[in-house]
Length: 113
Length: 113
Image (cartoon, rainbow over all chains, first blue to last red; front, side):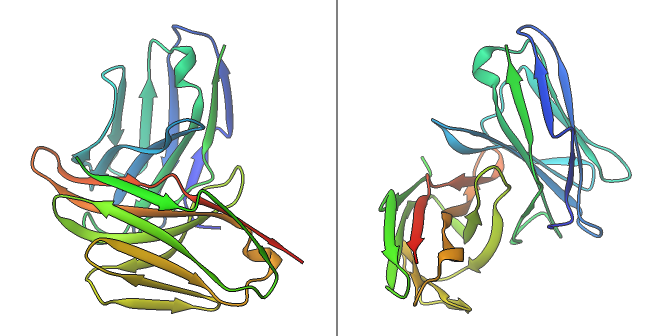
């Protein structure tokens, strides 16, 4: 158990809908990262927050957004969902914003029908 | 563009048969190279961080090494419980977005009893 929690575990929704994924980092960690993992794309970095501020941005679509709250939990919002958004979404956390190993949560499996 | 490749794609070993996994990378500015282990349907589990060429890290039957262009994960006398997908990732400098995290496609290791 990494100490990172993610909810929900599974999410099934329809195209065009909007969903919110939630992540709580390990105690003491200030950075949160979001990743998308699909069979054909592997693990893709989406975005990083450090102590409430956006720190780095990867291949995140404009339909997706994230934020980190004062209690350091983070939410990833996915809107106008398409079939291709079906994937495992992982959250990870690390102690600081740079030069730290990341600890991953169990993931949220999103299915868009 | 930051890139990470891994070989072989899949590897089957007999219990006790040592081998090595390769990770080759091309990045604009390497801040760190990470090895993770991932079991099916679960989040990646952190194994090692390497920061500079010549560095080595060991943990039980695993040893990771780093050169300027690649990293190796050596597995000595593997056991069936070592069966998993091993992911290599780099943390790279990014002019536009601060930093980037790029994962390789992984090597799927099966250790047969």
